Image (tube, rainbow, N blue to C red; front, top):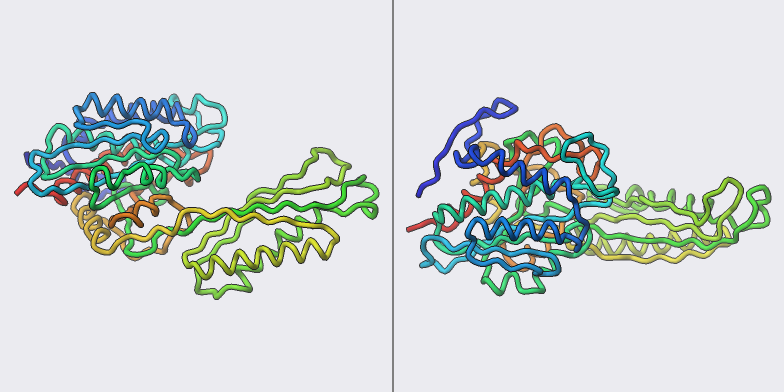
Length: 403
């Protein structure tokens, strides 16, 4: 049957066209989302979350359900009314939480100390579940919809794990699409770029070896904290003095830890951890070389020794032109706003791995005026649910229309 539309005035007094069914399902989907929020699980630990997802898919009458896929992932497959086209389109939602202590005073706040859904994956999973329920009821498309509920997006390689388990080949996925909420973007608005949209998130670790001693007699030691501090400052010159200002690059030292926790002991070692964000391979290689050179020469100048370890992240996320255009077209039909010419994000996202395997696109949906992602005060805005669900469903129905 054809999708029935209802027009609702959104928070920004825009006319937002959403599927009527999602107005009816709003409380139900919001309840799922809040349950997931209260029970966050870190990468490859999403056992409860995966069981929750699988149970809902079974309840909806989804045709195929596979658990333990790529670790703790879940795949659901919905057959359309027809399959004369032989087509298969994939939608992905991430499920994992972050090692962050939530500070929100909410009835559904995290019940697990030190773990929190601070990136909205609870919302992404719930929106795709809502779309799955609708699609399983209506089946108003020709082909198959493959629902990939992915584990370990937060630095765990979950996308690659699902690919290696056969996500694309087992169900002959032709195209793949993903969505992420974006704080600061008004609810009822989308954003999607053609080409590079998110950066490659590499990591690095530096261990500075000095000579420990008494804080009152620093001349008898090699002060590893002083050396580490100088390295932190030196690394900031890479983006400001070594790279063309027109290039997109970030070098951030985010962790500084000594082996002591006292007021008068100079430690033997200090550990630094940080991230590098780039789009181009040659820039990535150059930055690594500069980190090595600056770190080791700075340490040597103070009589210390430093070790550097580089850890590669997923590749930059690059949307395919035809698929990004179609995603934007559907976004416009759902809400009337699809930003196209915005600056790429230096954030990272392992959905990029899936876009290397198949054509597709990744878009942002507005989360309104909320705290930033990965902030202990962050909260997914449930008002996004009807918008996101409507986009998934409309994509399915228009990308694989019944003849």
